[in-house]
Structures are given as C-alpha cells and as structure tokens.
Amino acid sequence: MDPRIRPYRSVLYIPGSKPRALEKAKTLPVDAVIFDLEDAVSVEEKDNARDTLSAALQEGGYGARMKIVRINGFDTPWGEADARAAAAMDCDAVLLPKVSSPADLDALAALTGDKPLWAMMETPRGMLNAAAIAAHPKLQGMVMGTNDLAKELQTRFRPDRLPMMAGLGLCLLAAKAEGLVIVDGVYNAFKDNDGLFAECTQGRDMGFDGKTLIHPAQVDVANDAFAPSADEIDLARRQIEAFDAVEASGQGVAVVDGKIVENLHVATAREILAKADAIAAFSA
Image (cartoon, rainbow, N blue to C red; front, side, top):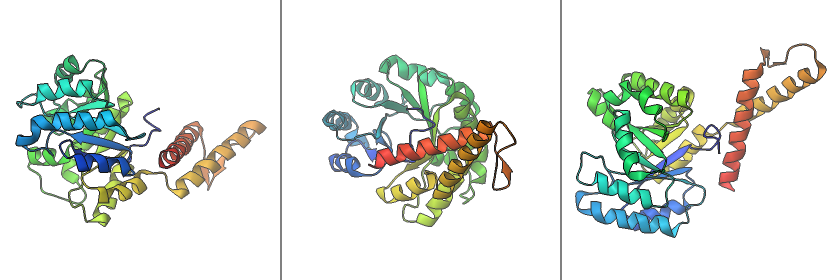
C-alpha cells in the first residue's frame, strides 16, 4: 500500500521481553507496533528477549498492523545478534537506533538482507545527515527519537517544542523528498491527554504520518488526531465534485467555499479520501 495512504497514526512501543504485552498488542487498535529489544528491555533480559519476540511473531495474530523490530545499536554487545535474529523474524521492518549516517544502515543491511529498514533519528549528526540517510535504498521509514535528541541538544522542555523544530523539520523534508514514512516522537506524560492531543495536532500540521506512543492509553488520542476529520472528508468530496463538474463542462474554474480548486487540491483530496477508506478497512 502507498505509504501516503497506509495509516501510521498510532505506533506503539511494546517490550520484546514481555509475553503479556506482546499478546495484548494483538487486541489494540494501533496501526503499527515497534517491538522493542532496546530501551524497553533490561540488560539481564536482552538475550532471552530475542527468543521471546521471535516466538510471538511466529505465532502471529497481529493482523494488518505494521510489525517493526527495534534492535540495539551496534555499539552495544547485543546489536549484531539482534540484527541477525530480526532478519529471520516474521516482521515487516527492522529499526536501528541512533542512525547518524547511511553507513549505519549499510552495516545493518549487511546482516538483514532484503528486510526493509527504518531509522531512529535522534542525534544532532543524524539531523544534519537526514537527506543522505533518507536516500538509502533500503530505508522505508523514519522515527523521531525526541527524548534522546533533547538530551543531546541540552534543551529545556517547551510545549511548543521550539528547540526541536530545526531537527524535526530537517527530517520531515528528507523523508518527504524520498517518499518515506515518518512518525513523530513520544509524549512522555501518558496521562495528559490534552497535552498529547496538542502535540499530535502540531505533528499532523507539520506533516508527520503519526505518533510513537509509550502507553495503550494514548492510542485513541493519536488515532483521532492523525485521521482525516469529518470536515476534511466533506471538503475533499466537494472539491472533487466541483472540479469534475467543471472539467466535464469545459468551462470556468472550480470554486469551493470561495476558494479556487486546482489539480493539486484535487490530488490532496483524493489522498484524504483514500486514507479515510484505509483507516475504515483497518478498523473493520
């Protein structure tokens, strides 16, 4: 499915070492799951987590949800073994943390073969190399690691995320230039639905495809924020109808709500309707 249409509204991190969490993920209305072997797994559980996750994915039951495995970095004792194990898992992509250059993805691809790759964008060098990273032939998606980025930048927390804007913007431009999926970073206050919705709305306005989440309680908020609204769907339909009518008559210019409707508006309108249909199919 075209990544501009396939839903990525909610992308939930699930510990790869927790059988109950892995089972629960099968019942959650998320568009994608990041099965985590990195931050969510303690040092003592690292090796066993690979087998636990592999067995869960082999068992299946995740439906249409995108299945992404986040491995440990190659600067750790577990990264290479994680990559080799992920290559054999029944997953849709392998996610590498702290990608700073295309060479990092080359090293991963050497171990994962034809498996699609995703990149965690969470370092200043990664931001500066975003265009080159996005152009990697095996990369299909980017995930913003805003917690690590904030640490590296030594920023203070601001609800408007002003200190993050340069990095977020560079990655968005790079992803969109290459036709990649790109999802926003996590919102840490998992009980603050108002704050989460505000940050999701900001991310959606910027062009992100969805939001990474740390708790199932955040799923509904993200799904609502990143889905086309009823007003957007209505406007899209009216734009298409008006444009088609003018095209058929061969006269005049299409106008909806006092605004001219051109080819580019109709293309966006068709994408909105296609995404709404895809979301409805996912939810069925």
